[in-house]
Length: 176
Image (cartoon, rainbow, N blue to C red; front, side):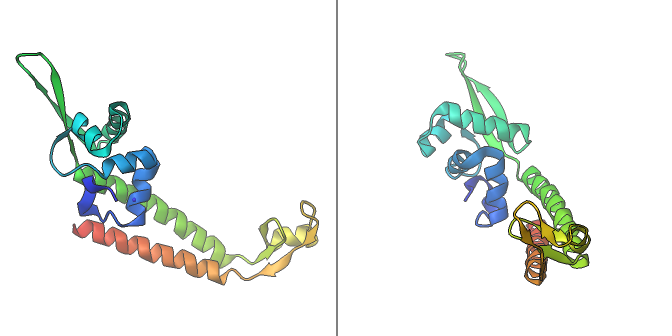
């Protein structure tokens, strides 16, 4: 998910990029790529990312609602103008990403158990358990074809690989 505001969180990692992409979209990720560490104003972010100030503010407010971005205000005594200084809470980013990883892991483990414990049959449009295929006399009325045995071993292997990668990523996240 590369987001310079979170460089300490493996920004090359697909999970990190996807996390932010889901939260703030492609444009938001592009804006985030232009944010250095420390405090910065929304105007400076807009200049660095060559983006409209309204788009930058929209991204910042989404991150603020997620408790990832924080701000402090500073008033100019001469003009009365208020400047917002933005920074990013890396601990909250870590916690939220861990929570999301836990939810993803739970889903993957449930899917793995389902795939490991079932015998699957497939037609041209769907994959079903043996019991469903037998009830339908191994005939799919939707695509008008027969259900054939389907070896899901490669799918099981892929799910196991995803689980291991996510668990490893989570361990690395905790060490940082």
